[in-house]
Amino acid sequence: MTVETRRFCSEPRRGFIPKVGTATIDPPMTERLYYHDSFLHDFDAEVVDAVESPRPGLVLDRTAFYPTSGGQVFDTGWIDAGETKLRVAEVAELEDGRVVHYLDALEHALPKGAIQHGARVYGHVDEMRRRDHMQQHSGQHVLSAAFVRLYKMPTVSFHMGEDYCSIDLDTPNLTKEQLASAERLANDIAIENREVQVRFVTREEAEKLGLQKVPPAERDQLRLIDIRDFDLTACGGTHVRRTGQIGAILLRKMEKVRQGWRVEFVAGQRAVATARRDFTTLTETAGLFSANIYDVPQQARKALDEIRSLRKQWEQAQEELASAQAAALLAEVPEKNSRKVVVRTFAERDLNSLKLLAQRLTRLSSNVVALLATTSPQASLVFAQSEGQPFDMGGLMKETMAKLGGRGGGSKDMAQGGVGKADGIEAALAEAGARLGS
Image (cartoon, rainbow, N blue to C red):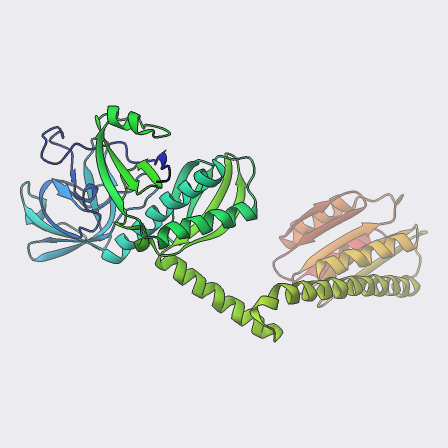
């Protein structure tokens, strides 16, 4: 017999319950039916209270609905109250240990009979959602135990999202090889279809079982999830009866976080859906390259190399074009007061190419002022001057933007700005040029 991994799974504040039939639960607390049977979807109960804020909700004396806690998200489903069927949109635990079933936002009001103390109702948990949650949570127990078994990496937190789940491992380093090995062991345990039992023990008994951490609790009874000969964990969540019901466990991503390493995973039908989506994406991408899906990384690297080469050629061509255009503009503009003021408005030129032209103009000669604008795709202006010229391009840009209703600024030798519309740009440039003596 192998040695079990014995852990502590984060669970609700009042997640430690007494044995069935005892009278140690305080009257206000809701009896958690899912503690004993995670496959229980239908139940009857009695209304003990109703809430109106932040939205309508019912508090029952007993429930099979799981409230958000311990990293696991809530169940949804329905509550039949007389002739009215109420949609349960969220389930939460109140401070006093009661469970409140919040109703769908479309429910404008609770039926009168349902809010009366003592009214009998019938609850039904969404079976597909519950199964998914059991697969993810039980999959997490197996996966966390695998990391402990193989590498002594304990799980410090668990998160269950709508699309994926994650565990945070307390370790300074994690490799792709370790990730693959833990995934393989976790799936081996799932394939072996090991029994998963719910056990209730006293705190004294739990301490003797060798749990890595016995959680603090207000109750003497602890609920343990026992995966035969592999993992023993204190946990209040919903779980499968045998590991084969988890299905596949697929690890998706690893990233460094503040407290260690985060591993994203999916299990069960989520793993199947994710694998199908991945395959579809790879197939479509491979089709673009006319290649096999396994050749996609190589084809993508080749395409990126070609793109980088083409971008470099394009940038070089842009610089050569800007230099040639700058020389042509300077040849056209007459010199006045020992300087050349170039005033031009372009169409279909982006801001970067406009700045490049301004730089070339002011570097080709020491007595140049460039007042440039483009009307599309985004109306923009660039003012620049050769080093040593006496004007303030940043101040001039701010004054021009104030007239055009735009925003801009910059340094003494170069500034830029943008406006919502191109109307008035040419007149504004002409006025700025006139101020500089062009």
